[in-house]
Image 1 (cartoon, rainbow, N blue to C red):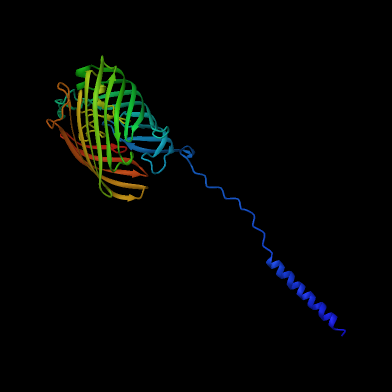
Image 2: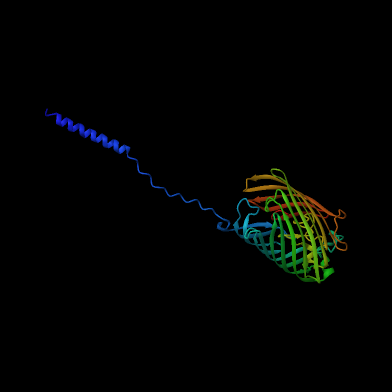
Length: 401
């Protein structure tokens, strides 16, 4: 009897413990405190992309006096990768010097994506071309190598010095259709070389100084997949220019460019350009078509007709055609590549008659070259072209068109 109370007490303790444990187990757990959501990653906008500076040397050619040792410094804000241009905006300075007196400095600004539906471009240029070609005016101007002698080494050459400022604004109208307005002021001086006589000296005397200013409006249709290395699409433009040089002149022009990708790594490209000057144009006006954002130097040289010298043909009217086949030889994704280019160039000028589409008296040249692509820029091109008078080696920076 003395053990029963102890046993009962022990049982009560055990039951109480079990009951407490059961009660605790049945008690609902407190709800967890609501967690604070993690902040979403910040999306960069165009204006957040930092501006970067790059600089590098390169080889270029200029007006029968290449190669030139050149240098570029560039400040730019990268565009989104899927855009058709590489930079939202940029400012750059190029300068170069040759071995025979040619030198240049060019400051450029471009803003294709700075303002919605607008793009802006500007250029300040100073350039001395020590061996610019002058063979006379008109499509019938002749070349005779026998005229170039030790006594007359510059018979077909002249020194041209240019100072020029250009500004352009382009507004998108709808889709790929745009309208562009360009203004320019320039001072150009041609100087005959001191050694012997020359075609220029016989026609104009020892020098010719001309100032010029113009406004040019253009309608542009641009369906290219990219601007830096087109593989498909069209770039069509038609423009009209009013200028003060000479006693005043005007110009109507049109340029059609197209690209077609046959397969991966193979691209066909073509360009057809025509221009007609009216009134009393300057001599320098005969050597350029003021195309949208990139003038076309005519007629002859690395950016118009590679088989003849820069300045070989000059006239109030110009007809120019180019065809290229571009084939990738080596490509390392978007880092670098080597491209083989085969081409045919043809063109002529009109001085005493008006411009017309014709195959009569065309100067035709053809050849092949290599282009080096670095990242998304065609950094350098070297081509060999056979023309009716010479076989020429042409240096370039970027595609011809």
